[in-house]
Amino acid sequence: MDKNIIEFAKTREGYQFFLEKVMADLPQTLGKIGDRVLVVNPVIIHESKRTVISNFTNIANTLNREPEHLARFILKESAKAGTIQGERLLIQGRVTNEELRKLLELYVKEFVKCPVCGGLDTRIVAEKRFRFLLCEVCGAKSAIRKI
Image (cartoon, rainbow, N blue to C red; front, side, top):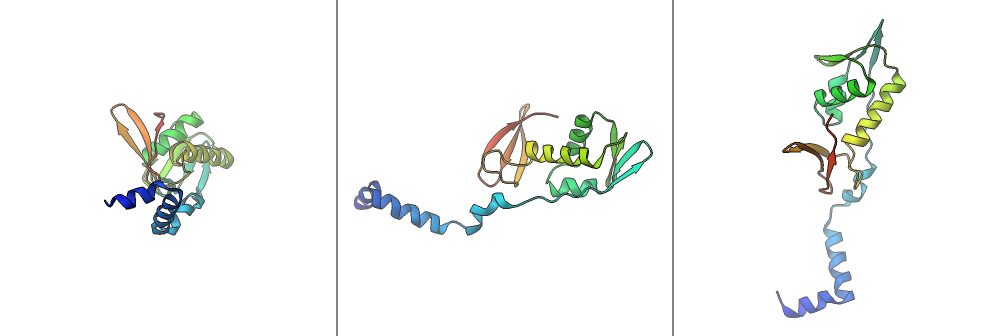
């Protein structure tokens, strides 16, 4: 690299110049990633003493998570038994719409949303016996609890 360029980069004007050049090359959507909102509308059916979420796998796919992981969270947090049958989640006992909405919000906050940038494009990775939330937007790696 040219010595004059290096000296120019060390000055305030040089820093400003190169910073503006880099920022101009970034895609414009990068600053608006945190504005995206996930819309999850569970279809809930109450059958006597059971609660059925009929579009459960669609919800898991919207959140980009395994249905088993989401089901384990909902069942453990609601202290109820249940199973996945096809597209549906069958829960033994009644879970109100409000309870389920709060559980889904808690799941998104804890296992989907990046705590650093607020991005929703994340995935769960396992390293040895630890689990991390890896953000595909900012690259942050945050420890999460095991369900």
